[in-house]
Length: 263
Image 1 (cartoon, rainbow, N blue to C red):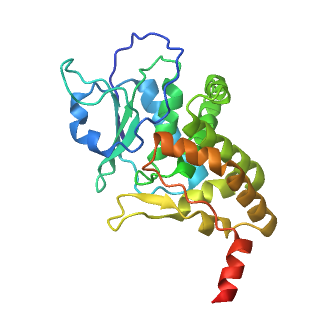
Image 2 (image 1 turned 60 degrees about the vertical axis):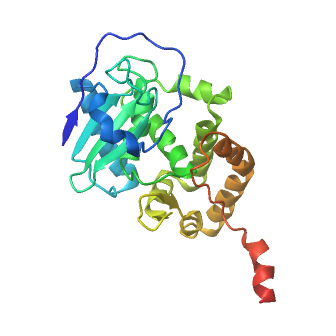
Image 3 (image 1 turned 90 degrees about the horizontal axis):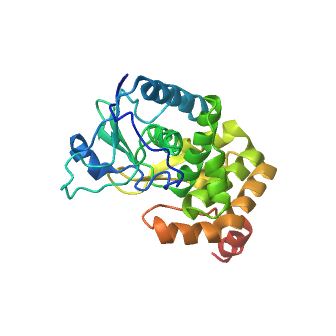
């Protein structure tokens, strides 16, 4: 696999944590990826390769095998450019070739760099998913990948607990709770329940009821309850910052049964 990565090695250690993925799966920006500075550092390439292998262990085989991952800092090389800047996201440049571009708003050496990159590596598994559950799962993945590398996640944890970036904080906490209920392996199978959100399949979401149906009765009830308990703040956070993302809540069977009986 080819990983392109070139960046300025000198950078300031930044304390402020920006959102993990300001524009997840930033498809439109990939067409202009060469207008952004690349990151080409051996240790970053090694981190990406390890992350891809790690995601396969947790999630299974990806929708598209990543053969080339191009890393870019989301700051146009032309200071006068009107292209967007300061965003983070993962984009599929060429599906047949398995070519991706990951944009990061923080440079290597920044305190937020590894957290952002780890989250975006998880998006390589299926770049067509625009879904709340997936964002939380990818953030949980980031904690595990950083831990496997002996890297610190605690600042992100504190950031979320202080109420920072509620969209990612709420979705992350939901995944932590669900993993406690169903275990790491079953939670990782969530990505196997991706379905099309549009006819072309360029956008997908998680069929949460399909996933819940794979659980044992007690797990299914507890997982459903956990989702509904966090549904209101999660929905508020989604509408406020990511209204174009899907968040399908589970069907409550005891509410559905009377309606079926009337038919």
